[in-house]
Length: 184
Image (cartoon, rainbow, N blue to C red; front, side, top):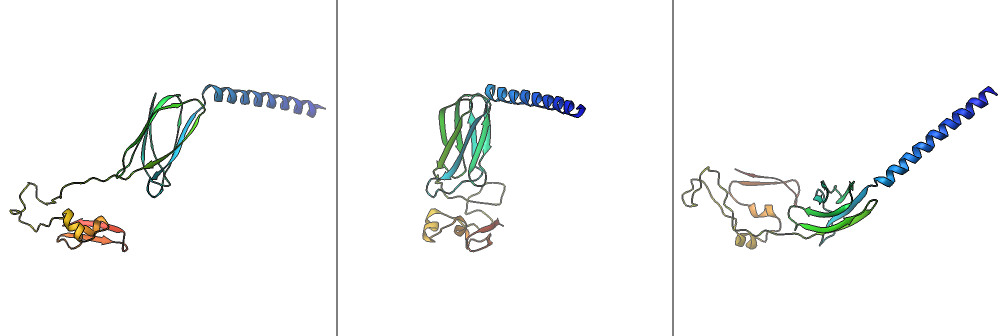
């Protein structure tokens, strides 16, 4: 009989503790639910996931993150409000969305497709001297990689443009992957 009274008292204490613990969790989740923003970032033409893309979410607070190796990202926000999302990645157009209303407890899924961007420049001269000089007066061998020379060689990858140029060694780990590009 002594054991049964002790067991009953311990059970009542345990149940009372469990009730208040559950009540506290429920109150906490109602007063401060988190806001989830998640998504996938891919290239628009090939649907290939883009890893390590920069994402900045601005609103009552500013939070930054990056996508994982499979192009996925996710953040949790504490404050509801109006947010904007800016996405940037080298070699692609920047992407933004504004006036995004995020309410408590919301789970927002955003799939983003980035467009490749190209920068067209004039020819680039690389020299190993500390002062600028004209090509004619340079005391070293100088080659110019121009747009016309690239087009005439039917270059597919950037490293192929440097094949055959004096002082530039291109090391490939396979037929297509460039392992190193060194200029002497």
